[in-house]
Image 1 (tube, rainbow, N blue to C red):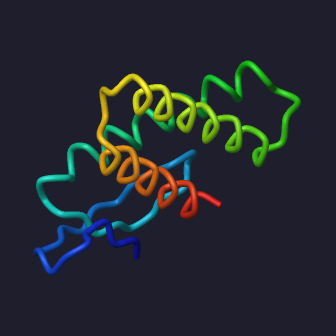
Image 2 (cartoon, rainbow, N blue to C red):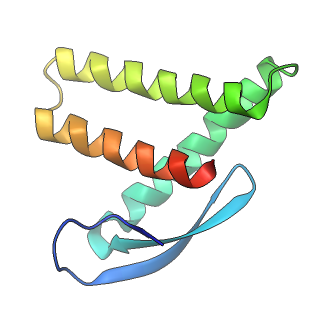
Image 3 (cartoon, rainbow, N blue to C red):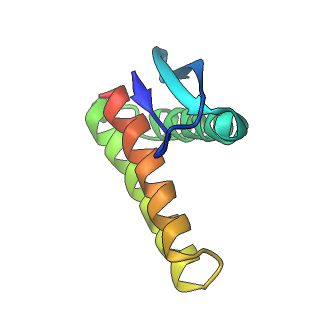
Length: 102
């Protein structure tokens, strides 16, 4: 299971479906909606790229989605709309979801 908690807080078990695959997760209850929203957006972007690039293998699609997120986060970081810890936290969440998807 993926643990999205950095301390000893109580974790809630949820199931995230990414690109048709389910992954059991343990998240802090206050982060549950953010994680599920991230999964929803991730699936939407994967679907958009799959429709646009029908001849690309799954690994290329996932890499393009990851790159899109990384660029978006980098822009937000440089624009000052996110703190360094926010940026790192979001990258960690994306990394965990994508690791599970692969």
